[in-house]
Image (cartoon, rainbow over all chains, first blue to last red):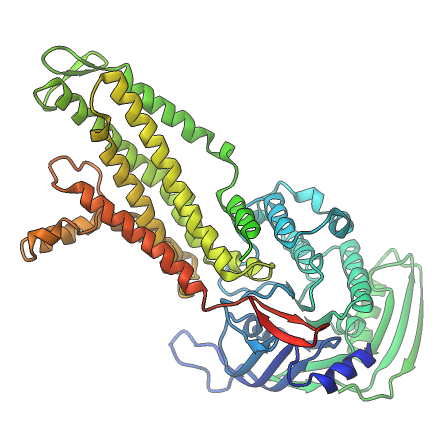
Length: 293
Length: 269
């Protein structure tokens, strides 16, 4: 994966999948004025084929706003290019997968309203020309059959995320943008999703922008981590370990974590201690010496 | 452009005909009400045997006036209970982030989506129009009156649907994404063909009468108004043009895909 990324970085540096340059953005306040200090000030964020970038940050730090800017739902100062073209709210991006909640307006979920899950899925499968073998596994793993007849507007947060995961991953995207993608998911679905995503990352040139407030999740799926601090993207703490974690019985936190930071480590430990099921755990770790930024 | 995509999207938007079973029942009841309870006593028109006055002097005039009034009530009923919630509000919802985001990430083009939305409106107008024509034919045959006279109100309803649907789609400019704005747009679109008659009355005396017959409006209970076939026809034409504008506006957007294997980046379709 690193080799692929290196090749594309050197050969196609002018056309990355995603490019944010000199971004300055702030929301308009209720009194109609912009805030004195911008919410986001990003000098550069470039994502090339094969890259897996993680963005961590606290609530309200502007993580979801980055996604909204990429999707063309907000227009900042600066350059936002998606698949080599300026991002626009009207363009279609069939190679882009998105899991998250754009929260553009209260109650807006990023999924259509007034239709049943089965109707939406039928339409999606037909448009993407998906064969049954391509989605059967996802349908079963995510348990979509349990809420096929529900109206999409009435889905719970977890069910909505499952549906978005299905829509984003079954079409085998080139770029996946995930904004708090595991929020609200049960343990089983979370484990299934991460396993599937890891398989996709290994078997295809899928690039990933994983945005989360959970450090351990970012460490599991990405190889470059940025922290969003006061609107600026900064290289995250370099004191990290590559870790392998096993629990008995196996839980969703089991797996290999690249660049696990101390914060991520503490999150995992609290999950282990918080789970009454886990009777034993093994951890192996080795210090990361390379510079990923 | 993939016709297959348009077909799939139309199926997604229009949905299953069985969802409108209640409409079919109401329509059938309406047809029956226009047939058997309506009669001619020799001096006046009757409804369930009750004589109704003020509907004209001759048999044909009286029956036509009564049936046109029925059609106008049906127009109002369809507009408020079917057109607004099942077409206009759903059309305006289809402009929301909820409904655009997932389709923007599916392998179809912006204009394919626009064409299927425009066809959604046209199918609606066509189906309602067909129901209206069937009603006119049945009533004309049953009561032995000129069914073409009854068609005027049907044309009016069709033009109302086209203009209202066209207005909602033409306003898909990315501004009306909030729930309140979308509801306002669909309501304004519903009443626009009707309130245009107020503008017509306002400028009727000022402008040349020769051109005023081309002023667009579509109102039920249009007995007594002149040149209504022109007004309704122009309304339908403007609605159709607005649908075309909606499609044309979508050509400024593109489907952005990248083909890494060929070394080509960012192709537009």
